[in-house]
Length: 176
Image 1 (spheres, one colour):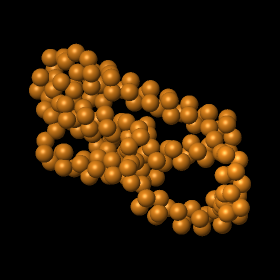
Image 2 (cartoon, one colour):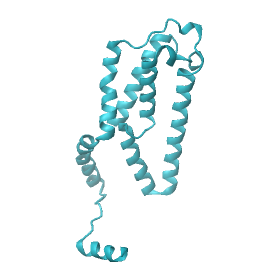
Image 3 (cartoon, one colour):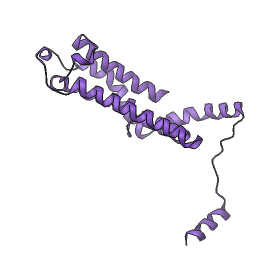
């Protein structure tokens, strides 16, 4: 939830900046913004890629764990989950293409890029997205005790498989 919150908060904040500059939320009335506001477009792209779970950004870790669990439950559940990931990627990239790329219209001439205050406001979210994307341990360590308590409460045992010394020798002999 933390990873989702970071990505979604960043996307909504940057979308708010975009709305302030354009005065509309209609995708059809945008296009070519990356030419006049490259910082805004870049942050919009990073936030959008975070929401779809790009590796290296914090939501990827969560999404990967959910996909592992989905495939562990059944291949058909995993297939549905992968379909949702692919559809979200298509949607986010299509939205970016329609709002940020393309020819610049005359009404974009007065559009300003992000100011220092706006960059400072979104920078902690972007830093957290990257930091937890490469080092998710603090978030996982915070969640694991609660997940363990929940599993115990519902009567599920999810002990990781252990390999004893005899099994290590057996697997080593099979490999040779």
